[in-house]
Length: 183
Image 1 (tube, rainbow, N blue to C red):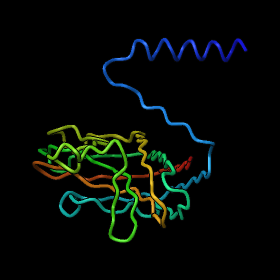
Image 2 (image 1 turned 135 degrees about the vertical axis):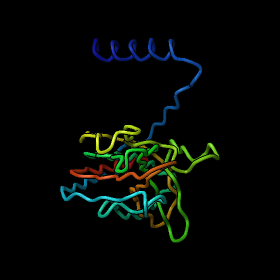
Image 3 (image 1 turned 60 degrees about the vertical axis):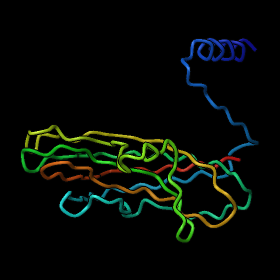
Image 4 (image 1 turned 90 degrees about the vertical axis):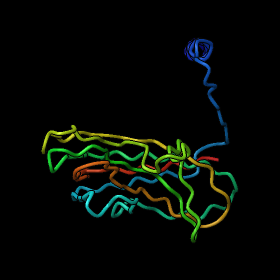
C-alpha cells in the first residue's frame, strides 16, 4: 500500500510540475506480444549512395493485427559510427521506424518528418564537422510508437544519411530491436 501511494504521489508531483506539454496516458488490458531481434554483424552505408531511407538488414518483423488500434512500441539500440570521411562533411545519420502494409508506409511517432522540411530530421548519430574520421563508436537508442489498424503489417527499421556538404559514412553494429504490442 505504501509503495503504491508513493508512486502515485511521485507521479502526481511530476505531472503537476510539467511544462505546457501534456502527457498522453493510454491504458489497455495488457501486453499482447513481445519480440526481440539482435544482430552482431556490422553493416555500413555511405552518403554517396544512401541519402534515402533504406532497410537495415534483418531489422524487421511481420505481424497480423486482428484488433484495430493495437499499440506498437519499438525500441532500436545500436553501436554506431557516423563518420566524416572527407574532412568537410556536415550532416547526421538518421534512423526511423515504420510499418508497411502493401504500398502503405506509416512512420512511427515522434515523426520528425512532420516539420515539412526534412524527412531525415531525427538524428540517431552525428559526425564532428570538419574532423576526418573522428567519430568513435557509441551506443544510441530510439523508441517510437504507433497504433496500427487490422491487417498484416511489417515493422521495419530504416536508416539514411543527411549530408549538406562533404561525405559521411554510417556504420551500425551490435544492434537490438525490441517490439512490444499492447492493446
